[in-house]
Every structure is written in structure tokens, then in C-alpha cells.
Length: 602
Image (cartoon, rainbow, N blue to C red):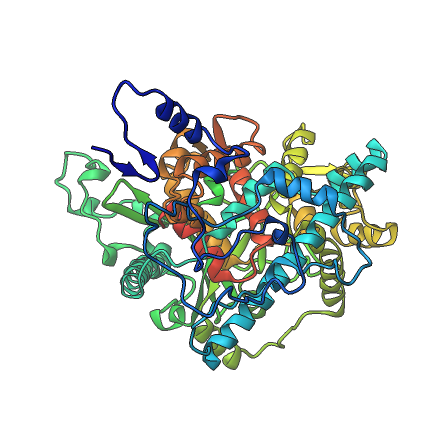
């Protein structure tokens, strides 16, 4: 029985002629392959490979016949393979070699990829909304291609310029203008601008903190009132005399003092001034901190009082003893004090001298102060908060002349602002590197540890960190700071005058974070504690998956260790210098507060 499958006749097993022919026909194209196939149906157009070239009217389709194409499979008499002819890569290359591209010829000008429009048949007309979206997509595609081409040209141009730039000039430009790896890592800390807590949680937290602060201040007020009302009586040595000896038994001698019942109405002491609670209530309360490079002294919680009836003041320290015990101890005894530095040196303190950011100086002699503070002849405290309502009441009832800032003080502030404005642009991106490096440079130069440096040393420091000032401005600055004319200035004051200083609102969060890391007020934080408490889970790069918490923690530790003398510990000044430099690039106070809240959970 003979079977024909696709034009091949079935033969017995012994026949080899037809099998060899079928095998050879399956191997590919042969010159006489047309003879092995049947005739071409009339419905199938003739293949003409010469018409596969590009032509101007290739978009127009002209059917070979008006009839519909045959979709049924070919029968045994007409076997042909169906497919879409296309040019292979080799054919494309061969075709391009035979037909070169002429740029100036209008006929050879090919459209760009996004300008080729292929409209299929039998589609409904596009709507107006679709047309608008297509136009927008087309314009965006053209714009992206244009930007990509421009970036490629700029990169190639920049590479060519760098090749012709001398090595030393390129290095100098990179040092002065470009950001270093340290700057890049420090700038990552400015991204914690989101609020760490919800609005309800923030309100509860703020209410609890305000309640604790008010309770602490009220305890100090009660202690001050009790001390000032009873000190004149209980501190006089005459009350330790022979009081109660008349009541002792005869012949037994005088009893020891600890066995005597000493009461207030038995004393013979007469107070020189009749202080009453009404007089002491007419006061101004303020919070303050000590300007010191010693972390233990800088973290002391000071609460001061200015009394309007005699123009005297006193300062108390609120101290914690364990978890549940606290007490208010006198730090500056009540008395009338005067300015020790500045344009008002020697003038007594008035109510106008107490405002947020004001400096109050005291002489260390005659005061029971810690040893670290008594090393210098004077020390300065900075006012952080002031009760505005009591201050306005004291100003209304004061009989003295209200002394505002003098012309010299206003001129000094203008000089400082002008210099800080000149250097603000240079410090906008490299504030952390400059502030931490400058502080480390000053501490290394301060061999004696007194905190003052010579004029040449301070000017060399500005030159080292590319903060050069004109000679005229530097001399004006030096005349303001060196009022004693001894040729040396406290480098902390010099740094604040040249670069500026954070607001007390921001420094309160820095001190709060530092005290959380150093609860015992030792003045140094171990790096291992920084790694333990630093939190990066709310960093935008961690939330997006670009970086891990460990990477950001390592970046923070690396940047802050650049300013440390001891790589295993961070002092208060080094911690403060870091955030002082970070604060330069953050405009809003709330954003800076969120950086501390997110990082340290305060």
C-alpha cells in the first residue's frame, strides 16, 4: 500500500532510493528543490526576494489578489512552508555595505525610533484622551533622549578637560570644592527629618516631660525659700552657746551639744534684714548651663533666681542621688554680682541682662565651687530659658533706668554676623568635617590646658581649614575678643564668633542625648555605648532598602571618631562639635530635633 505524506511516497523497507532523496531534501535548500514540490496555488502570491529592499512606499500594502488568502493547510499536491521573511543580521550588514547611507540625501534620511508610526488595520479611531497620552509619551521620550545625549557629551567633555588639567590643580580643586567621603557620610545624618512618634504619642511624651520639669523647678523654689528665710537664724554660731544649761541638773556639768534640745525660739540671734516670703516671691527664675569643655560641668542642671527688691541673684544646682532621691544645692550664694567680661565689665546685673542666650560671668573666688571650675579666675554660665511673664512684671515695677544694648555692643554683633555670613557658604556642606577638625586642632595646640591660644595660632587654624579672612576683618574681630590686650583669646569664644553657634533650643537636645549616653556624668562616652544606643531603623535609606542599619551605624561612628583624641571614647566637646557642624546644613529647628530624636530615642 502506497501512502503519500507531504509529497514523499512510501516504499518498502528495501527501497533506498526514495529514502536517500527524502534525507537529502531534509538537509536544506538545494538548487533543484523546486522540482520536488508541487505547483504554487493561485491564491498564494509569488515570492520575489528582490522586492525585500527598503522602499519609500513600504508602508502601503497592495494585495496580490482581491480574494481572501487561503488559511487551510496545504494539500499533498502543494507543499510549502509558511512564515514571515526577515533579514538576518548578516543580511542586514551585507545590505548596509551595498547601500551606503548618505546623510544629506532627503530620501535616505531615516526617522528616529520614536518617530516611526505603524498603524495596524481594522482598528477603531483613537479617542482624544488616548491622543493626548500618546503625545505626552512621545514628548517625554524625546526629552529623555535629549537629556541622555547631553549627559554623554558633558561626560566626554569633562573627561577631556581632566586629562589636560595639571595634577596639582585638580588635587587642590578636589580638596577645596568636592565633598570627601567623610562629608558624604556626615550628610546622611541630616535625613532624619520625619517625626519619630505619632501626634498623640508626642503630646503624651511632651506633657510628661513638662510635668517632670515643673516639678523639679518647684522643688528648687521651695528649697530656695526655705534657705533664704531660715539661713540667718540657723547658721549663726551664737546659737551653739549656753542655751539650755540653766535647765541641766546641778553638779553634773554641761551636757554635750547633741543632747541639748535646741529650738528656734530659744536662740538669741537677731536677723539684720527682715526677709519675708512676699519679698522673695518677687523674683525671676531662669535655667542655665556652664560653658565648659568638661563634660561633667557642662551637664550640670542649674536654676537661677534674680530678686527684684535688692537686685541680687542666686544659682542652685538640681542633683540626682540614685533613682528616687534628688536635692537642690546652692551653687552661687545669694548676693549682688557684676559683669566680669565684655563691654559692661564691672556693672551690676540688671533685669535686662537675663534673656535666652545671655552670658553671666562670676568670679571663682569666695564661692564653694568644684575644683574643675576653680582652676580659672572666672567662669561663665549661659541662660537657656527665662520666665517671660515674671520678667515683664519686674520690668514694669523696676524703678531703675532700663539699659538696652549700647552702640558698641550692636557694632560687635554686626561684625560677628558679617564674618559668619562670609563663611556660611563654605561650611554648608562640610560643616562636620570643619568643626570637628577645628576643635581637634585647638585641643592639640592647647598644651597648658587653659583653653586660650595666641593670635598667630588662631589665624593659622583658619588657614589650615580654608576659612581665611581679610586682614581688616580679622583685626576687627581680634579687637573685640581681646579686650584685655594680653595677646590671647579663649578659642571656644573665637570659634563661636567666627563660625556661629547653635541656638539653645538645639543645644538642649544635644545635651539631652549626651546625658542619656553618660548618665553618671563622667564627661566621656565609650564608643561601645554609642554603637549600642545609636538607632538607624528610621533612616530613609534603611526604609527604602538602600543601606542597612549596621552600615549607617558604622558611618556615624567613623565620622565622629575623626575628632576624638581617644578612639575608644567621645568627650562632650567632641560630641557637641559634631552636631554643631551638622546643624549648619539644617535650616529648621524641628528637623534638627528630629535628627536627635530618631538617632537616640529621646
